[in-house]
Amino acid sequence: MREDAERWDARYSGSAAGVPSPPAGLEGIPLPASGLCVDVACGLGGQSLWAAAHGFDVVAIDVSPTAIGALRASATERGLDGRIDARVVDLDDGLPPDVADRCALVICQRFRDPRLYPALAGAAVPGGLVVVTVLSQVGATSPGPYHAPQGELEDTFRAFAVEIVLAVEEDGEATLVARRLSSRTRT
Image (cartoon, rainbow, N blue to C red; front, top):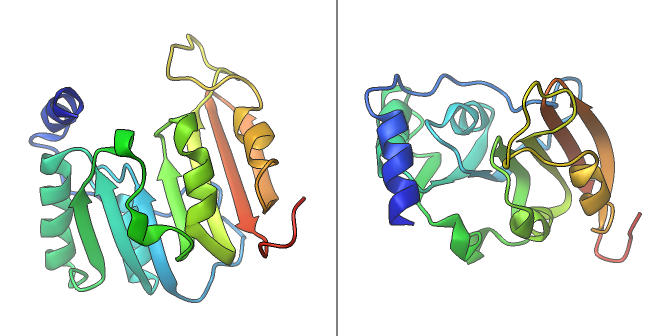
């Protein structure tokens, strides 16, 4: 964790605070009215700020203390600090247990760890949305080790109790939006 935290702290040091912005892929998809949201690898927290401004209570997690500090400051400036619980978390240990099966919205933007995919799907309540965007080999000019192979998100999430609402893979990114089904239903 220490090396990851140091690398990301250096990247975020001196960066402007996150700007509220929706996660990729949610355009035109009805959102749950409210509830808990987890923003995985939140960075400076643009999606966390957006979710909080849209009525969600957010657990924002990232390995970088610098990013979490910037998010906390930005949330306070915007009057959203009561809605965002920003935490330094080592994702090598998985998601915090207090988000499992409790989230109306699960966000993971531009962080890829296939070992976390089951936990991302499992963090959503039935009817909750999971939105994941990762770097992809599809359309990438020079794909590297962090780029997902073609179909990774869609193929993996099909094994979970979710309905895939959107799956797009182009220009070096893959985005998947899925709605968790009841525990008895599986597609």
